[in-house]
Length: 140
Image 1 (cartoon, rainbow, N blue to C red):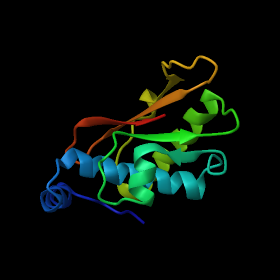
Image 2: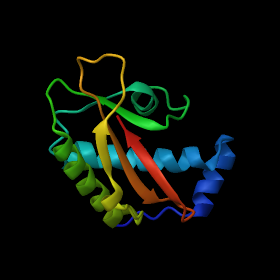
Image 3: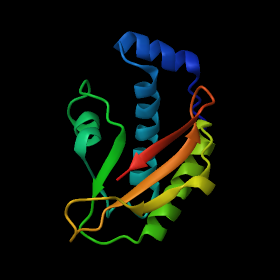
Image 4: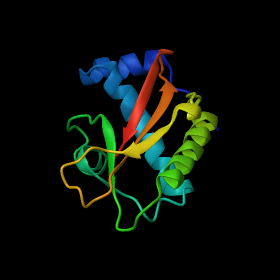
């Protein structure tokens, strides 16, 4: 089933909430990624959502919009596996939402950090937004 969201819906929602349309777009994409991750991915039992989107999606609906999705895990997950799983999620979302992801541009790599004894991966998924512009979602 395709759930197409168009520019008019994005603009209408942004106007009614008094926020920029980029927040609404990102919120839709974040929600779809989380839905696929926790219902269709082998990462679902190893990644725990944390940070701003965790608070927003789980507890405080009207809190600030976050630019990324933050996760934690108690087990190591190889970057190659993260990239493969997230590309599969992106392709699944294309079929369900009509958003076109460019999985050839997905980047998975080390995030710069102050705490050198922890491995932190940063993933960037690239797609065309609801206005046809190049955009990206960052997962940490």
